[in-house]
Every structure is written in C-alpha cells, then in structure tokens.
Image 1: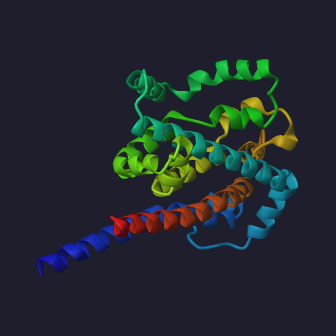
Image 2 (image 1 turned 45 degrees about the vertical axis):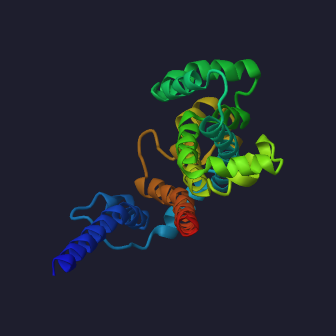
Length: 274
C-alpha cells in the first residue's frame, strides 16, 4: 500500500512537471493564432484562434525568413560539428592521457568558464576586424568551435565511461592515438555527445547578441537577428512576432525529441553492455 501511494505521488508529480514544462509552448502556439488585441484581452483566451495564417504571412512579408532560417541552420550545424570534434578530442585527451602541464591547463580551462562571455565581446570584435571577418559567417563559427564547458563535460564523462583496460587492449592491437579516439572512445561517448550536440546547436541557434554585432549584411542575418527587426519603432505587432518565434522554436523541439530519444537509447544500450 505504501509503495502504491509512493508511485501515485511520483506519477502525479511527473504529470504536474509535464504540464508546467509544456504550457509555455502551448501558450506560444495559442498567441500565434491570435491578433495583438486578443493577446492583450482579459480574461486571456486559452484556445487557438483563426489568425495564424495571417500572422505568418506578415512575417514572411516583413523579413527574409527562409534566408535567415538557412543562415541559422548553416551556422548552428557547422558550430555543432566543430564543437563535437574538438571538444571530444580535447576531453578524451584530458581524461585518459598524461602530458606536461595537464593539471594547470585544466585549471586554466575551468577558470575561463567563470568569466562572463560579455567581457570578450569587444576584444573578439577587434580580432575579427583584424582578420577581416566582420560581416562573415566565419566570425560566428570559428571562434566558438571549441569551448570550456564541452571539454569539461566530455572529460568528466570519459573518465568514468571509457575503461583504461580497453585503451590498453587497443594499444596492444597497434592503435595509435587518433584510432583510439575515433574507433574505441567515440562509440562509448555517444550519450555525452548527444547532449553536447543538442546543447551547442540550441545555443548557436538562439544566439542573438554576437550575430547582431558582427553581421552587417541583411542577406546574412541569422534568424534571431531577422526576427528582432519585426519590432516597430512606434507600434509593435506582437501577434506577428509571436508567430515568427513559433516558427523559430519548432526546429528546436524536433531536435530535442530526436536527441532525447537517441540519448535514452544510447544509455540503455550502455547499461545492457555493462
């Protein structure tokens, strides 16, 4: 009886957490189907309206949504691929290899995580200007192709999940460093890479401040920068802005559903093997 009550409380708590988590997305979808006047109405309307097509049409008429979407997709995909490669390579090295200065380099790496990213905006812009990358996608992709959090995350995961005996067996079979990384460690690191990939893609997709500073050509605007131009100087059409935001969020929801499924399946596979 006690177990049943505990299970019931657990399911009730999970259901409440599910509702709280889903409601902001539901409310976003509802507001995207309403007019600005209806958004401000009281009491608020909790069911879908009939103005979604009109709001989306005004979004496409106001900004180059498709072009901005493709720009964001390109930048986020390239950033994610580079981060996964370099962070996993560095994290694996920190976790399983000894080299001079390893401890102090890792301490320095952790110290960089404590500095606010806003402090680097001006120096980063100056460096990009020196390289002649202002206004190009290179300024969005290359500076972020490795980060301290990703290296730390992979290092912590690899320390516990990649057996040293497996690496020793690989060395006996003649594997070099890169083959140990690519063929032996990466399959084990897949759950960590799934999380890091989703985390990096979402962060790059939602990035607004740095693209706003570095990009000066409307044809290269990312989605967040393009959507910010929907704000009027005197009058703001919130229905149109919410509709554009809904379109920008949908790819992230699809990504989350795919990655969470992959993440759970990888963990389950690892548990079965162990």
